[in-house]
Image 1 (cartoon, rainbow, N blue to C red):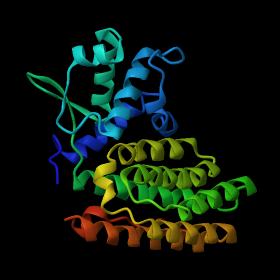
Image 2 (cartoon, rainbow, N blue to C red; image 1 turned 90 degrees about the vertical axis):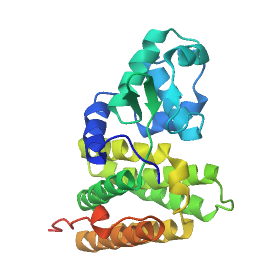
Image 3 (cartoon, helix red, strand yellow; image 1 turned 180 degrees about the horizontal axis):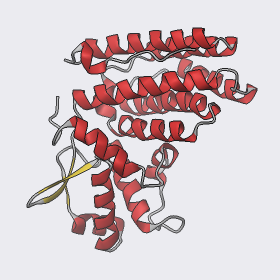
Image 4 (tube, rainbow, N blue to C red; image 1 turned 60 degrees about the vertical axis):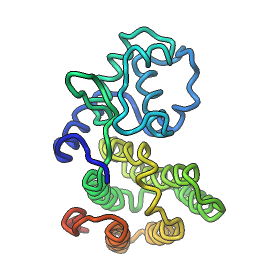
Length: 265
């Protein structure tokens, strides 16, 4: 698997330090490819950031590709100043790295990065389940059911559908997290889900829709029961099965994706 520039642990810290200073979220990223060439409704730097993020996600910008300020300015028809600011922001959130003396490059995503991010997400998903039991509304349950129904209708098996499936998975867990009423929890989950949205190719080989459909349906059933212990137990089972799938497709050690169960009381 690809080599990431620097320690993945440092990358996680840099990721949090940087992305908390932006107003970016997953819904904006999902619309990045459709942004107008004339940014009339957002700050220019934010617009360039979203365009580059969309390019990384869609494979227009590849790992280890050099990002020239001059070329990007010409590509987006803007001055070099917002491009320079955008590259600095992308460096802060771990998507871009500066390599002296040549400039900025798209960073690579490794098995270790994936393992750390997914382990943190597992922990936050467990917390969101604990906090949301009894607080999910009929509208929330309807949205969760709709996501499951959309997954059932999938017929293709390509990178575009993988992207949609990852988005559905993110939306499923964010609906639950928002019901918790904890805004910081939602923010942290959105931040951690960002690289999963960007690195679709790396996720492709372990996406199994029948698996995700089954674990989502099981979690939805326990959430409907209103039983916190059952819901947390189901989340732990889902996390263990997800780790087993991950270990089956990548050369990770079990300790790389360990998650300690929270107190269900």
